[in-house]
Image 1 (cartoon, rainbow, N blue to C red):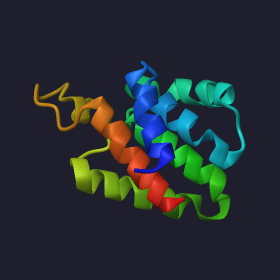
Image 2 (image 1 turned 135 degrees about the horizontal axis):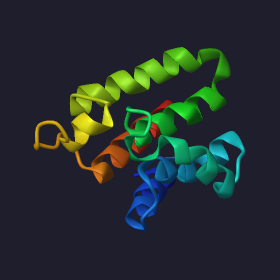
Image 3 (image 1 turned 135 degrees about the vertical axis):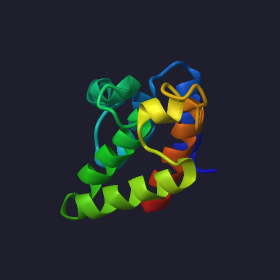
Length: 120
């Protein structure tokens, strides 16, 4: 397991939001500080934008790292995440509508970090 993935999981264990766990672990990849990463991550957390915050954070990293290929890279990441978890929507992953979670938040952070790490 790479250092970036380990750091994302550790961040989440230390009560970072799903999006902040990813963005802070991979911030150096796009040349921003962890403080900047936390600020960027805030609107993505807790399903505020519908999609899983870990996925949104990973897509943000990809779009900044590969601006010319952002749409393609983000689509690839999201497809792989959905293939793993059956959804990229926070409410569905948490089981908010069914009472049966598809994936834990920590699991989503792990999956998004692993996919992002492979794509970088």
